Image 1: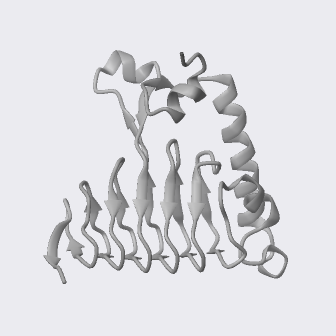
Image 2: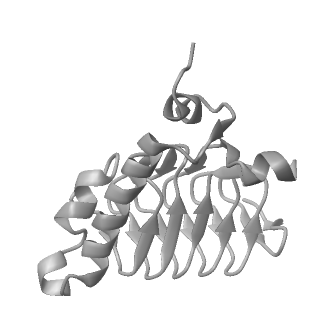
Length: 185
């Protein structure tokens, strides 16, 4: 039986984000993000040591431009040679997997938390975490938003400014709000 809010979050069950244990993890991520953003590029490298320490999986070939923001860090998993341009935000209440050689344009946002629709429960911090999976060799255009629970197939393209509310097949190009398939191979 799940007893802690973190266990509920990790299991994909309803949990409250207003929780001491979760707050400690968020604060560790915020400190690491701050260091990454404020370090001189010559000292930061591709990913600052502090940020690398809080991320779930971060190969040496990962490049994260500053500024960057994440909620927990521990749920983010990068493949080899992933590139995140400046301003990316990953709210990783659930697992976020980004496949090898995938590139995210500036200001891309990835959301895993879905807040409760009942306003009383929402104000109490009740939410559910849904994973986001991005395949290999994917291009996500600038300012695109990926909503909770979506999967982007290998070699897909998400047009700049698109809002992805459902899965994108491998090789497809999607654009718009909500994103719709423009072409598929």
